[in-house]
Image (cartoon, rainbow, N blue to C red; front, side):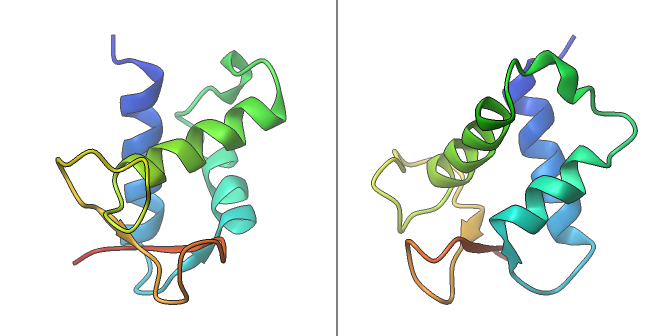
Length: 89
């Protein structure tokens, strides 16, 4: 069984691969909630679900303080703190 973080990271990537644009975090949350194969009920609160998505993006975006190396998957053309993220190609 895959862990929650891996499944969520794959879901974020999947949503972003379907479009060649950046997503507002609120739109990204909604798109991921609608994925039929992902059980979001295991997250105890809406805030917990959304926080996990943000953290995964920050851990995989070199412009973020949480980035500790590894895969640099996400970027923000509009700048850190704007809540808009895209997938690096």
